[in-house]
Image 1 (cartoon, rainbow, N blue to C red):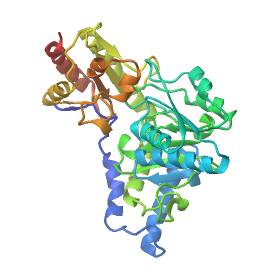
Image 2: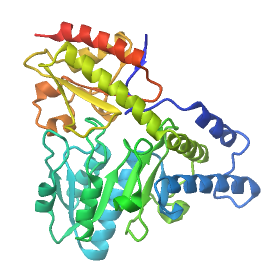
Image 3: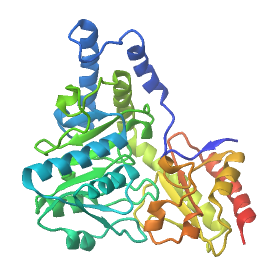
Image 4: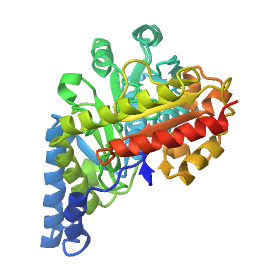
Length: 384
């Protein structure tokens, strides 16, 4: 049996998404910026897709900017707001956490090398920052704060509405990386109070290479790509029409089955947890704290019980047909322990024993049971 439990890295393309995309890869090939009929057909498809996605999060279509994916969207927002605010108000202080995805973390790191003052807040075992920590680090020059909605490695869920309410009183812009929550949790940008969010199609059975940034109207933001007038002069480059249409179809499908899919993955995750604890309830820890996404299960094999070797462990699982991750997909292929797992207080040796299972609508109870059989073998193999 071959089992795919790495849905937080990417998901299989939904057949209906592929069908929607095909015409825009063949006969409807026009450039959406062209004024002739071929271009107009593509422009209509892009704008209809923008409207569908905007409605899904209760935004205005003019607040949706298509990008090449979540990484570009996060870069666009972090650099765009920080630089604009510095130019307009002189505020140069930024806040994020130690547990962010690299596309956010590294963007803030780069800004810290270019004159900005950045606080990377500690998250503790839950991988979520506390209100007290946030309040203590805000000052009169703070312009932008960014915390992810659902952690891509631990699955921890941050209280976005709570943070947003706090920051609104202080006129600070709040961004949240929603790549792991968009299409899986209901997001209403108006009620949540966020100024910007990001999402990526391939996390919800859409195509790779397309994402979007929601930027609330009135939020100061400057482009990071130059040389094109697309996306209202804020994101130059010819629109990826087929991918945009595919993204919209993936959103439509997700919206019709959010509760059903959530219930399904919740059952899978709980069965997996029960199975893991029946194998070893002392030497294995479940990460992410009390409030975690049903789509992600991160476990750590404690180094005082196990000989942790991440490469050998992942290879063992893969040889036995179970595809998982030992950290974010963007760092797969390297043996460096995850910065997220280390930020929660684990030692390097413990972090090496961390495995992330992530679930999708296509996964089954039978696959969970098979993966548990393989995990039982792994645990016996690597136990001290």
